[in-house]
Image (cartoon, rainbow over all chains, first blue to last red; front, side, top):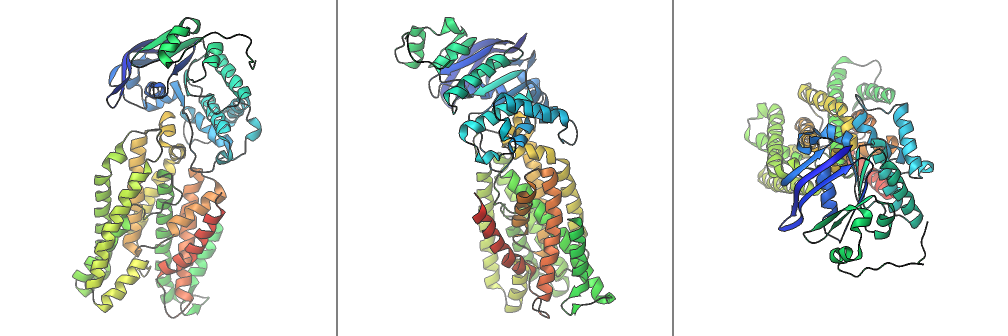
Length: 248
Length: 309
């Protein structure tokens, strides 16, 4: 099932063109890793897909409907975005911070029912934070807070999941857990994650997008992640290495 | 909590600067009832406005005067008390204050139009420019207030000072304050689930289906008219709108569905109590209630601040 279709999308930031004439289809069952240098436009792309920025040029279609035609409430059920970092200004228990993900599905007064609660617990269990249910989010470490944000998106359960550097603040064990979780989620969702770790992307992603200076490469992971393409995008040399120590 | 509130009201009506009395004499009783009724609405308005602004600006230290509305009200009140003939003064001050408050709300909405209507972003600090705009409006009106005070005579000065400190010496039933309270309070309770999402950031709220610019505009509007109504009746009574939502948040958490009604109730009780103290503590002299709220509010607030992690 096709979930996202982008045609001829151009994203500008000031004078710079970050992404030019991008045409792209994302199906259910695909885990895309978006790779590129700092400032290449990974976050801008995710924010644009989520509807946070207007589209200057090009067209984005989500589940067969133009992004601009969907209401804010309808969008909230179709796509979710986990931002690069979450800043909390008020104390709030972990359970509540995950529970906000249920908001788009709740009708009426907004009090949680049993079903919401079990979905929230299930989401926390998947990111390994179920034992922190009553902790205050302002006391969590950066990595833990990110996993709570991930759990909030699991509770939201949108068809299209956008994640901005989900592995950034995680230790190696948690990085693997999150990549595996995204791979599992991709069975009945479409998952797009901005990443910095090429090795993780090569191991877990079904598809890869490389963002270079005014150019992009996209396709199945093995086809795109070739040493010469990667060197062109990142400006450093690449080679295959064997017998290196790997977490598995 | 409701019980506590009723108890406070009963004590406040039966006690006055002439001492406590039971059974109540009807003349004193009527006057005190009017004061207590006004104090309830104003305490609730100020706390509601404070709770909304703390949430909207994502700043637990915001209060109803952060956006500079009381400054305009002060100038309006002073101008009308100096310009109008003596007989019209008490009505004139209220009207003048209201007019001044409306002018500063309009000023705020005009200057901060772009920030108020801007789409949500993940960048932090949507509130900062709004706060700065408010601070500047307050500073401008503050200068005009000082100018008016230096030009005033001694008796005018004393009356003006009472007003500026916040004074509950009202002589009619505060219908306007109650009407505003009903409007703003029911809006806030109705929108509490969406306000809850806004507490997690504007972009998060948008991603979860909240129309952020509209909610933000409405929240600023209702917080502003709540402040304007309170200030026009009783002057700039400080600290209620800052401390009360803060205490409620510490006790109940940040769920607006509980926090907003609780803030209104506690704000009403706190102001009635403060007014009771103001009337009785150095009787027969009456203190401006704003002095009492500040004297209690400052140490309380510093204590809360010291406890913050």
